[in-house]
Length: 239
Ligand code: DC
Image 1 (cartoon, rainbow, N blue to C red):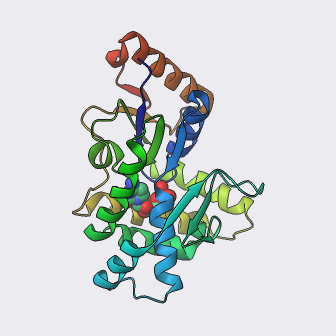
Image 2 (cartoon, rainbow, N blue to C red):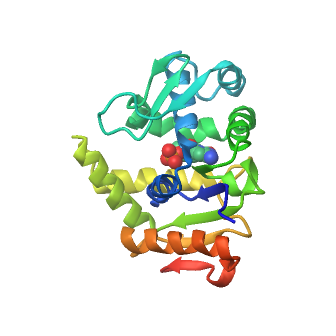
């Protein structure tokens, strides 16, 4: 059977969103990059001038926020349109300012509980590819297919730098690498739902794996689900 719920986890800039988006289009499924919810929540915290260190205030704000994640409403290269209480923040959530505060905000258990509940509501309808840090371990542990996508911090920093440069940002490679390492550390050491592969996830290392090789491996996997031959190969790419 074709997997109906697909969970993809991994660190920043590992290629997980690229795989997820591709797979969702290939299967005609809903695509949800759950990082956008944590980013949008962080944007709202900053917009309201709430101290990021004030766990109670941050949590109570996030519990009351209304999020919309819908297909692009503007043709400006965005993967989706993200709104918080009706305000389009699709580009603001990618700013270095949001990026610098999103890991601490997403470490708060109350914030996670609120956003996890919303993700589960979406997952309940099936036909979804959900991408994040804890999708296979916490959000939908019974997902039909789980992938864990990783790459070296250096490879991820190089990719992120190219993306930022394309947007006219002037950060150095060292700054981007330091930011990635810091987020990796917070995301994988936090108490609530730390970043880690689910025991039954299939691992991809995209350090040297080309996009084409990755797409073809994922297609083979999905076809394997249909024929019941899924777990012959557990690891793709260089580990
Ligand atoms: O994937 P991203 O870089 O857009 O994610 C932004 C932040 O959100 C990241 O630092 C960790 C957090 N996040 C999370 O904790 N759990 C998820 N399911 C998705 C993202």
